Image 1 (cartoon, rainbow, N blue to C red):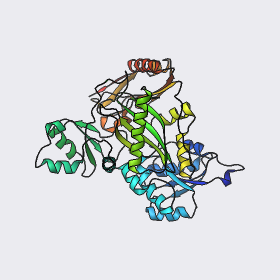
Image 2: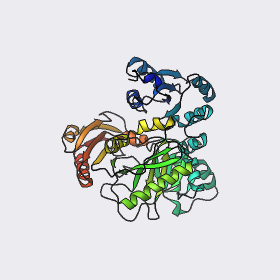
Image 3: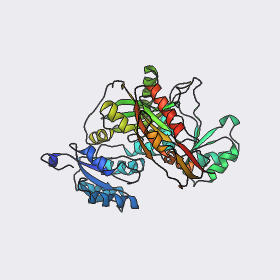
Image 4: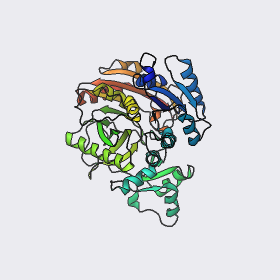
Length: 425
């Protein structure tokens, strides 16, 4: 993939690859690096997925590059081993590897999130503290264990409910739930190991309605290059399935230019508060009556179909952009035109009360709906189900394109009326 007359002169990029099941395919990362960098694959964790990734890389001739097995190394030892390869940059693409990569990058003097910024990006409690200290609006928040200790003396006021319980470290809304009473709070916190959970006040929904088929929050892709910050685009989100499972996204968001600018400004302010100086980030922002409130900042490109949206709408490869910034290239986008089409993704979720899938109807029919380009099955008949797995519980992913937002909404309605999920409770 990277062989050829000029390959040897390309800079060397260390890609920290933590999980074959969670990461983008090795082949896709290798393709994004073509013409940009030679790759040194770094495997930081000892679990089975990393060993499988190494076997996959060695088995495929089009996935070139040396492999450094750092699974038994501390960050200091890994930095010493990496230094022998003389890498020009280092990066990663999932939350689980950000902190490790930041520590190694700091020891090598390579551009990446600082260890302090990395801690804020991967620990939602530290992130809330940073946003609050920089004057950004945030909901009330507590370490779950501290809140329970305080509740032993005086219960929170009734007005403090509903609350949201979520892992301090985690993705895709796993183990995230709404709590409406003190009894629910006690039971939910007791079900998790100490030190794992964060409690937040529920960010209020706006009183003015959102566009039909839209949720009152968006995601903003943000580029930070040598300290310069560019908001690349604002993606609309579809209403959540209980309790907090994502059901889809579409690009661009169905909102006014003024609202879009306000949401992007909130995302940029949050990135500054975290202290990020290089990288591509994914920021979720909720619209409220008092203005935008940041839900969370993620220190890597967005998941779902975000990368595909940006590639098709603006010919921007977010993965390759992350690599270029990691290698020290300065990139900035003062403004981007509004796309002429609407790109969408639907995550078809089961009823939260189900425990096992017994039948899935309408998959083939959904493929024939105008505007639908692809339908990918995510769960099968007989699979166990739990809402605690968050957005990963999707039964199907439906992607496509529409000429405008109204057409995209019509396609969404057609898909949801066509695919039927049955199961036992």
